[in-house]
Length: 301
Image (cartoon, rainbow, N blue to C red; front, side, top):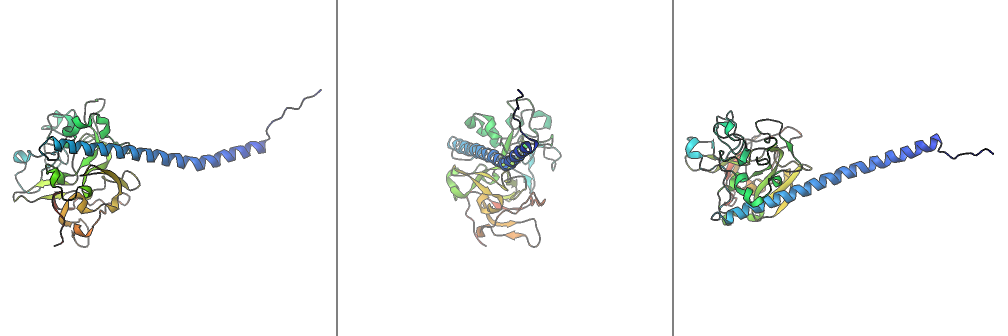
């Protein structure tokens, strides 16, 4: 007796393959979005803990926020626009020979990045005892910087590396004197992970005591997730904000901000002026500057 074995026909197999392909096309974007959401949630947790670490530091330090380079001005700054809070530690960056992790003096004396005792005081090293794990300073949404001048030190668990920046307008300011704690940003997420704990905006040294700060709006900060990022605020809370919704006054700019664009220059932060940088178009107005102090109230001139 001849037995006939059942089998799939070619048409049936093709139908099954087509169904699988359709399901994959539907589900893969869902999985990708779920992965992105998980990274964003992890990043929010990180910046929340960094923010709280900064507040704990101030509680133990006579009510002042962590410093980022103060004390170096007497050694290096002798004219207007000298960096007061480190931007980089490269010796070829406007001839600065010190910085929060990328350099030292000379630059080869900072093998531990911002955690190295040879570099200037910086928020990363000063808050590390309150954070406990340096891994919290790395955002899951940031890749290691490709430039060896900034890239994290490889294969050294004690070396500092971070994907976050501190608001330099709050450096060494009394935490209890912040004008609007729930509306002032203290920490932001940057695009890449580096070995330097820097500030953005960054204060500069002026012989007349002016409080100008550069880097009001840079394209490598605040664009990690859907053209936005997580921010840590002066009262200890953290939340997501789209970059083009972030306001100058939320960084502590209280007078006119000079925007690096045409036409015009001056923008009033009291009128809820927002950031305009856009890495998709290549627009990076890093030169924007103005009077910045988190303890001052915005006003219209």
